[in-house]
Length: 574
Image (tube, rainbow, N blue to C red; front, side):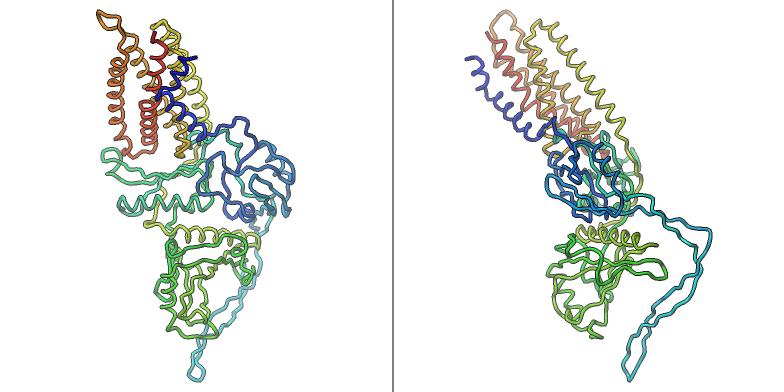
């Protein structure tokens, strides 16, 4: 007992125990965790309109968990989909989570079918005519109606539109699985023009914020470069990996620059991003515009949306400066506020007369959406509103991006690789134990080597969970390499400790440990130097491999291997 107390008082053992305890909190393992958690929320879906939101940064174990649907408990994905698939459209369902209770109204899935016949429709257009009466120019609206033959469109309800929640089985820990293990979408983006590295880094930050605001989880955005002599001449790309997402969910956001401007005449009043301090996304100040209800015209149905925003004082001053000299016509100013998205006009708003020359920070943004039916028009309207809200929050990208490549990744191969890696790891442990016992003929040596190796793996995973690093194939390869070098260093320590000096049987423990760690630190320095160029090689997998390897060997040299030396000394010292 006294010897055990002596070991536990060793500073190197204390550091290892503290690291393991902190790692336990970071990983937060819970093998009995059941149920389903929300991974992502489809834009403009019924769930999104009901108030479901994903925080920008969240750990796997803190994801919102669905507890029950219509008071029926949910313990796995099978039970979730069994209940969801039984629900029809235009029904209200109640979803209770560990955070709050939501009410969702399901919507019908509508399919448009073009018939082999035509119909005559009345097309009504409103044009503006300027007339001069008594020396005053006035603008009047004139309505023109004409008939046109168009193909008949039949709408057919084919089922229930998905409510918009992407769920997964409740995680067992905070360890994140990467794209290779979980599946998802990988997109390679290229700037439309030559861009500096600083601008590319700014676009990486903007894309991260845009995708998080839009409701997509598990987003990884990295800057990669083709080195001269590999592909091209140092071309810069942005690699976007979104675990559990599909192409349709990300393509529109990534391929467009998202440049938003509001102008009076040719002068810009405000832009999306820094000029806007607040964008309303809740139901009380955003949604279908009650002042512009859905209506039918010659092009089908059209609906309007509106939401409130808050400008910063500088933008409000610009508005006051640009409106102070405008004339008032019928309680509105003679110029309109024109909204442009990606240099295309999307809407124009009348400016109330009481805003003339006033630095007002709170204003309303409106827009519209079209569709062949009222339901589809409302869906398109809400889709346009959500995208515009996202762009106003995040701002436009400095340079337009082109999608060079987009791939859907299946998780099947990754899961097989992970399972095989675990089997091979177990076989490797058995082989190491057998060799150590055979060579040193001391079973006590094998126990701390295996224990230290397992501690090293756990600490690497804990650090990955703490910094939000995804566990992918490259990370697994890095862990294997780090643990392999760890076992090698432990054998070096064991060799030095067990070896007797020539001509004497005296054990000089400090000298032996010092000599062993000289060898270990030399190998550590070599590994770090070798991995450093890979950090800047450009390819995401290579960079991930380098980071994991450097992280693993650093944890080993600074924490686990000194502790192993203390345990070995304690076990073998007479």
